[in-house]
Length: 112
Length: 509
Image (cartoon, rainbow over all chains, first blue to last red; front, side, top):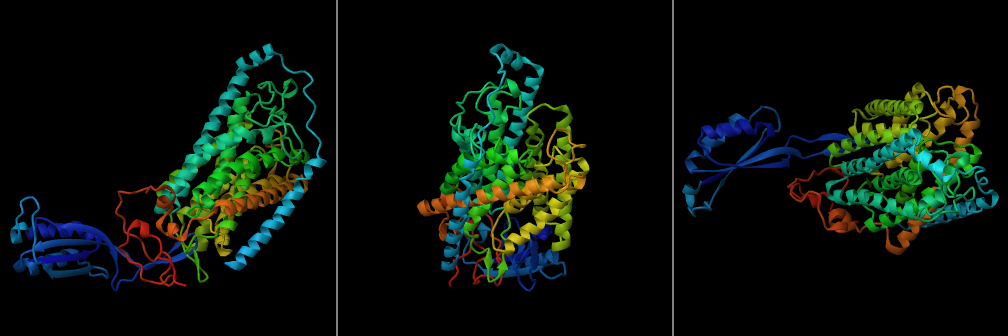
C-alpha cells in the first residue's frame, strides 16, 4: 500500500475530490494547513504596522491506495489541482506498513 | 528596564505633588447655593409624579440610560475582537465585571462625591447610598435636598442615579481596552473601584456637580471630558506603568498583533453607535422634543463623517482602508461630538466629525511610535477625541443653532477666544488630576499586588492564566506565524502550533 499526501490550493479541493472519485477512491482525510515553498508570502499592514505573512493557507489530502494505483491517482490529482501558477502544491508518496479498519479489525489492503 | 523604572517613579512622584496641590483648591471654593426658598409640598410632588412632563422625562431618561448600559456590550465586543483569541475570556470578563463594580462603587460613594452639595472640589453631603435628603422630581426653586447640582432635571432621584451610573460605567470600561492582554484581572477590578468611586466623581463634580469648572464657565454636554477623557487619562496612566505587550516593539520595529475577530469588533462599534443615541440625546434628561432630535442628528453626522475621514486618512497614509481604523474613526467622531452635541449646528457636527476621523488615525500611529501600546485604540479614540470634542465647543458653540441653552459662542461664531480658553482650562485640569491620581492608584496597586501577568502567562494567554477557561476550546486553529516579523524574533516558531502557542517563545537575550 502507498499513502499519497497531496498539498493543494484550498479552492481546488472540490475538483480534486471529484477526480479521485473517478479513480474509485472511496475515502480521504483532509486537513487545513499553512505552508510555503517557493511561493513567497506577502506583506500586510495592520494599524500602520507592517508584517510579513510567510505561511499561506493550503489543504492537505491524505489517501491510501494499492501500490499499482499510486501513479494513476497521483496523475489524477495533478491534473485536477494544477493551475500553472506558482503555489500549486506538492504530492508525496510514502510506503505504508499496515492499515486497520477499526470497526471490523480488517488489516491490509482490505482496510482501505 | 532599570532606567525606565526610575523615570516612572519620578514621573509618578512629580505628578503626585501636582495632584496633591489641587487638593488645596477646595479651600478656595465656597459652598453650594442656599436651600430652595419654596420647597415643594408632598401634594405637589405627588402631582408632579403624575404629570405628563415628569412621566415623559422619566421614561426618556431611563430608556436612554438603558441604551448607554447596552454600550458595555459594545465595548466588550470591540475590545475582544481587536485582541487575540487566547485573551478573549479575560477581556470579556473585564468588560462584564466592570459594570458590576461601577454599579456598586457609584452607589456606595461615587454619586455622593459627584452630586452631593459640598465645595467646588467635591461633594460632602449625602455621600453614601444616596441617603441624602432629596425631593426630586421637584426641581429648581421647589427642590429641597443635598443634590442641588442636579435639581435642574425633573425626574425622580433613582432615575437620576441610574442615568448617571451608566455614564460612570462607561468611563471605567474605557480603561479595560488599553490595558488588555497583559494586566492582572484583579488589579483591574480594584482600579475600577477607584475610578468610579473616587476619580470620576470628583472631576465630574467639578463639571456636572456644580463645582468650580462649571462656575468658571466650562461646558461639557454629555461627557467628552467627564467620561471619555477621564477614561482616557486613566488608561494612559495604566499603560505607562504597565508597559507594552511582549513582542509589540522589537528592534525599533512596531509589530502588529492583529485582533482575532473583526466580526466582533464591528458588532461592537454598531452597538456603541446605537448606544450613543442614548448617551447624547439622553443627556437632556428630559423628553425635550426640540433638543433630542437635533442631538441625535449631530451625533450621527459626526459619526458618519468621522468614519469616512478615517477611511480616507487610512487609505492615503497606509495604502488600504483598514477596517479597524474605520471603526475607530466612527467611535472618534462619537466621542468628539459628545461634548458639543447640543450646542452646535448639524453642519458644525459634520466638520467636528471629519476632524475626529483624521485625528484618530494619526493618533494610533503616534502612540505606537512613542511605544505606548494600546491594543484597541482607546487613547486615540477616547483621550485624543475627548480633548478635541471639549475644545470644539470653544470653536463651534452657536447659540442660534443650539436647541438648549449653553456656553457662549465659540470662536467661529463670533464668541472670540474666551470659551475656547475655558475649555482648555478644563481639559488641562481634568487631565492633570486624572493622570496624577491615576498614576498614584496604579502605582499603589502595582506595589501591593502587581499589575502585570508573568511572561509565561502572557504567552499562554490570560484566559488560561487568569480564569482557567478558554474562549474557543473546540477550535482546532492553526497559528499564523510571521506576525511578529520574520526578522523580529529568533526564528524556529512552528506553523503547526496550537492556539495557545500563538504566543512567542521567550526571546533568548
